[in-house]
Length: 267
Image (cartoon, rainbow, N blue to C red):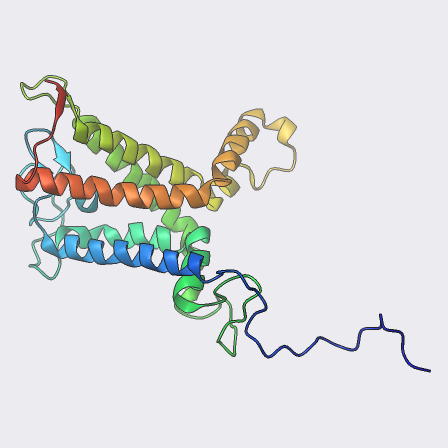
């Protein structure tokens, strides 16, 4: 007597990489192009080492904040210059960018993004990956992903510094209060950076992850609900803050180089 048709005899052998008939490759391709564009711009901008400070409006480009090197132009160092001028191979952003990039590279969303788009691990749901082995995040360098919570603390500090940069950008041409297009762009940028940083999974866990009785901690519970709401938009905030950093940096560069003038709303 033959076995019933419903009896499972093992997984079917499928030779094709995937049975999906949609354009599953578009999202990882778009992610790859977007991240590569940011990386290329960041490298060029960092080693350009010029046009990052607009003294008449106190505009400091985000890529160069805080400017902690003796190589920084006068006025751009709001927190001193503890590091020496080490030449063109070590421009001022090198002292801060590794920590900022560390936060983004170890971010839970960005892990998914570049694992899929750069390593095809896997490139999409229901698509087999080309790698024969999987070791997870137990070996170098991926074991460094576990340091995400510590990069989060540094990211909070950098966001606070950029907030200070934004506050002093409300400087008028006569020394009073003034607002220009650059000021508004910096406000939008720092708002998106705070939203992205606070929407981090580590922040959500820090606020309410160890609580067993929310009723006994109403304030932390309220904060946890707000962080959870932001966390649901973590991907959107990750991309929007990345774009805003590049755009504000580009804008300050254009103003500092004299390519464009900063439109002033008043003063």
